[in-house]
Image (cartoon, rainbow, N blue to C red; front, side, top):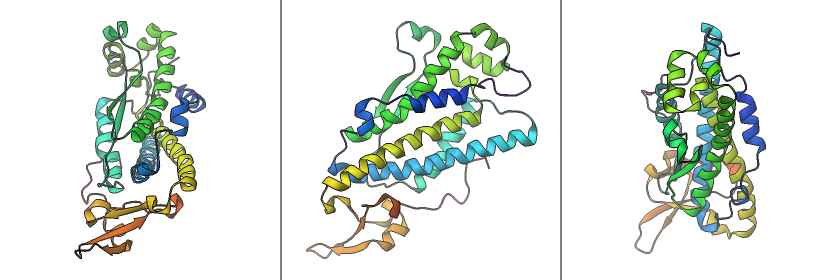
Length: 278
């Protein structure tokens, strides 16, 4: 039964996440076969950004769970919460750890409106900005976790659609019925947790690929040249090695060889954060 008292209707969400984690990703995604020595800086940037995003999503999930303990009610998924979590809270975290000197990639997992299900695959992944072939594989792997969770939720709905709708809060029931978005079954904390799992998956895949690249790429491949502190933040700029070209123009080099050494960009979060989930 799905209670009306504010408890999440997605009791089995953890099973969905476990399923997503257990289901093997496509072989090309598992080994990031398109990632090579020329992609080291982009890979490193994605790892740094993923780490920042995972930490922020985990923080938000914990915050919302604690909020439930204080209020006795569960905050259910809404597009307003999604925008706040993704576009404000997590984007601030990613911006603080992002290398502005590299290309980026993005992707999304689509859930069909009811009429779209007649002609389009459910839980389909769309790469909206490829960046490079390597980054495309990484974002596809990230979305692969969301796709597995999405497919599981769709099966959950098919087994008892009418009963599920009758026991949901009205706003969530309308979102599920008219938009076909199964995330309306989730609490906002579960939404944040699923994102944290997706970014953790990225990090593990990148770490595995990084070990391989350490073995076969020349040392210079792990040196990143930066020409202004705004690219990576003052911390890396101040600690990077100074080099000058034949004309005397100054730039700096920082080494990215060891993931555990943490040469990630680091900028302060905005003094006045737009994230209200604190």
